[in-house]
Image 1 (tube, rainbow over the protein chains, first blue to last red):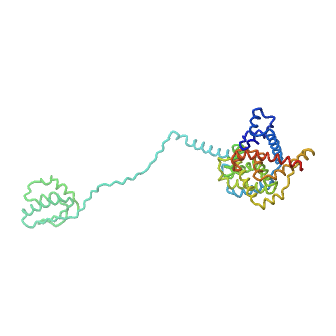
Image 2 (cartoon, rainbow over the protein chains, first blue to last red):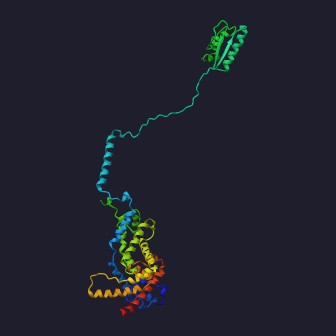
Image 3 (cartoon, rainbow over the protein chains, first blue to last red):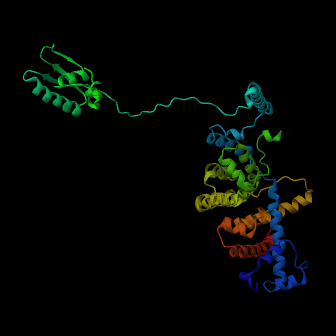
Length: 220
Length: 193
């Protein structure tokens, strides 16, 4: 052998199918660069022999026991149910499911045929909005007592002034009105009370007074 | 109608079958077994010095490995290369066990098959097979492994390199060297027989 280590794969391929004589002139020339004609033919004949030798093995096959044991092992490993997509499905089952779905769809469409134009759905709902509002509440927790004991004119004048001032400051003030020759009691101060309290009241100018008007809303 | 029946996997590639096996599809396993069991059995049978029982045990081992390692199989690789690598490794482990090797050598029996050939053909065939059996038996296990992969299983040089874990150049030159060696031994043994 001239150059065995660099033997091209083509020579191995050719030596498996063609004798040296059946190679083309170029191929023969190429082969001779690496091995002699005799060496090539030896290899060619041996390959044929070996191929025939192994070809006889095609009669061989393993016993059924091997497959049976493997089937058992397979069943053991995959004991859990198979994926639904791998299960065979009978046509009648598919047809039955289709019919049920189709019938239900038809029934639904028939029942809702009249209201087919209405595509929107009205939804009534209650929304509770919590809103903070300013409550108007009058708490009357102060009682102002007026007592006319001294010189009426002078004291009444002063007291009246005080009443007016008090009412002006505190809108939620009730009046305990006590005057000479009058019953003691608590009542809503009326504009006339103030007029009465005012000395030398010659008219009803106080009735138009804003303070008096506001005062009159007070309740006990 | 066929659409609703079981998946038609007959046209599936080996790699697709492996994916189905992983999902627990028994028909995929049956098909892969059908494709490879006989070829693998022949390969094992010869590598194990024509020991039928041992070859069946090993074949079972190979497919159990398929069953248990389907999830870890790399789908980008060839299933056939993977199967033969498993089988080869099983045999190599067996060969490493010296006592087993000796036992195999003692129990080696040339395999005789039944065929419909004429008496003369049978005698010729028997003679040739005996001769080759004897010559093959003298080869190293690793050499027989390569010869079988090439001439029994008809793998390409590249596939043999992948299975045997050798460079392609080594496989190529070893095949040629083995054939030359066989030719020489056949010549000398034919005179003895």
